[in-house]
Image (tube, rainbow, N blue to C red):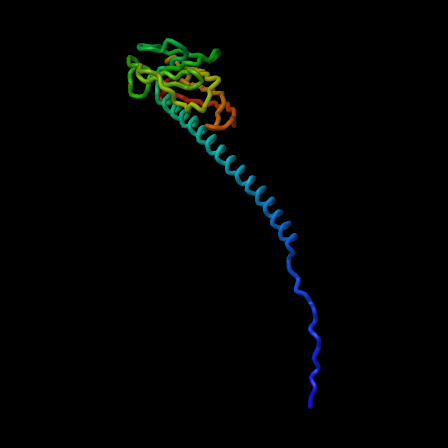
Length: 194
């Protein structure tokens, strides 16, 4: 007969997590997740502010591009007040003006001019003697608008040129974030005037 030797069962315990270890690990996980969510929300908020500010700056760039295009195609540049019907050309190279008038493309010198001006922190445009309307967004605050005009007198051997200098601040709606800007744009009359 064969005897089988029986060995006593070993009392090895399978090791697991205790309740205290589980509570500590859950608490650490909660702290890490709270910090991560806070960082994520901050990034989302910063992205919204940046997009809103970009939208405001795009509005300003489109307004200035449209202004430069209209000035480039126009004629009879008049810098300063008094640019009404039958206006004459007027330079302002040494003392800039916040008002600029010109005859738009397709009109003769007897028509009503277009006038760009600074009013209440915005750039306004008046077309053909009508009421001036703002062309910049309310979120854009223009602190300085200057027009420098040279060569507007016919036959002076200079091609008419307008330098537009705009300074101000733009802010995203609903936030305190603002950015300042200083933009210069030059428009040279397309119609040859030498």
